[in-house]
Amino acid sequence: WLSGPAACCLFSHGSDQDVEDLNEMLRSSDAPIARVLIETFDFVELCCGPNEVDGSPPPLSGAVVRAGLHVGPRIDIKQHPFWDLGSLRVLEWSLFLVSRGRVRLLHTAAPCTTFSIARYPRLRSKLKPEGFDPKEKATSLGNLVLLRTMALLFAIRKLSLFHGSHEHPKSAYSWQWPKLGWLFAQEIGRAHV
Image 1 (cartoon, rainbow, N blue to C red):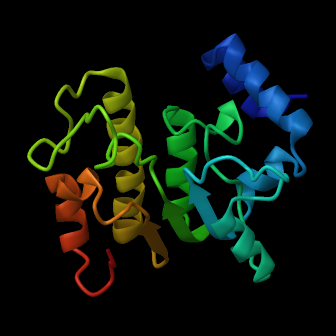
Image 2: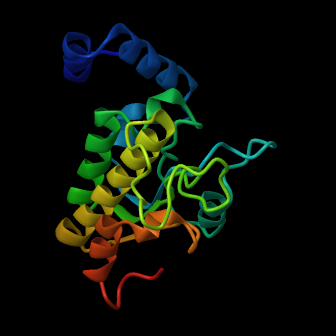
């Protein structure tokens, strides 16, 4: 399935699993990957969760499609292992989209499960929004994904004329994190919590 310079680069720098994951995505994708990599999108959603039980896209992406806008791939590990935001390749491609003005609205919704006030046992508090033990696996993964989505929103702020949004419940501990407060404080009048 893979050929050309991109394949050479992946074969020389990627693991066998990376190559197999990409080949699987290419086999199962509706759109050729080359087309996806060069397109401009009205809307891209990160951490959107899996498709609905009936196979339809998650609610926000589905509404954007129904509005007739051009929706990019839904970037979430629950869609396909290839779309793991923990992967530097996925982060790099997302930054490419933002820095080249290839996405008009990037919506992020980092999994809030570790940031939820309803979680038991709690992994965080208002005083420790980064976590009681930031090295604990679930806490560390939550922090990584949240920080990467914030990096993308910061890149939009600095590099793009387009827009970004972030979705977390207002009560989530993530909003107590000074790093998030700083990012959204920079955007008075443009960011909405």
